[in-house]
Image (cartoon, rainbow, N blue to C red; front, side, top):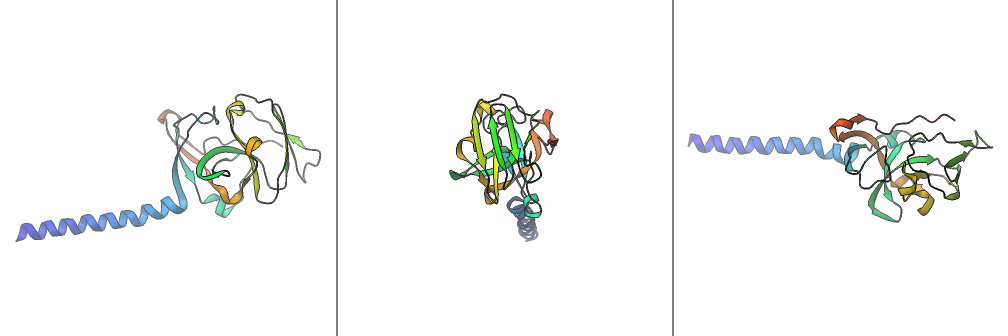
Length: 186
């Protein structure tokens, strides 16, 4: 009888532990952070294929995305797919891409300013002109010649942004907080 009572108590403790763990993990996973594995080479050298990241999902609920943020978003052409790129253009700006030179025109810089892109690996020779509307972002991969991005399929609407890269956990040798963070000088 005593063994049966201990066994029942053990199962109850295990069930209670599982419920508490679910009550903590599920909300964090749904509302605050989620894992993301980089697939492909569009963000080389910043992120390599199979880098394991944690994405901060709460920041963009509290503040606006910024230029140079590395973001994970739902692909506009198929929202079931997730992409990772860097924000280059913000809402209501104009982005001109002329080979390796990217110029942004906005209210503060009506004549435009060239982006300092130290994070870019391979340049592309494309020429594009984009005028962004409210809640639209222009994104590009750091490996310009190997990236499918806003130059090809257009702007990303704010509601498609999942979050920004918060932690790089793998590979361990490159573990980092706010990986890919880069401050733009305008």
